[in-house]
Image (tube, rainbow, N blue to C red):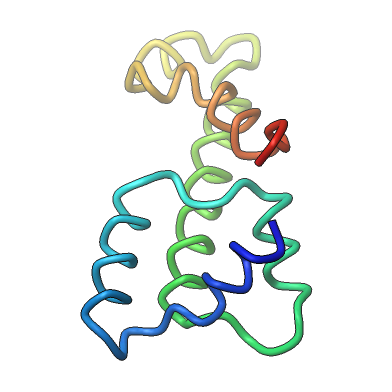
Length: 104
């Protein structure tokens, strides 16, 4: 964990390898909340692209969860039914983002 988080902290856009890492990383899910918190608690600041990626991802997830909760209320079934299929299951994404995976 520590070695990987240290590696990510140093991954700026100064080389082709770093840009390739960034592209591959941004094509995936990023870090879970636990590991992102660990990264942010280390000395110094991680690269701006890494912060922006996670802040955007978590903000969008929170917005979708808020909509899911609001539209799950009694009397809002029509709004819930209008949600995109992936937004009806956003709670699964939230659990995945929040849990610490064994061995991760």
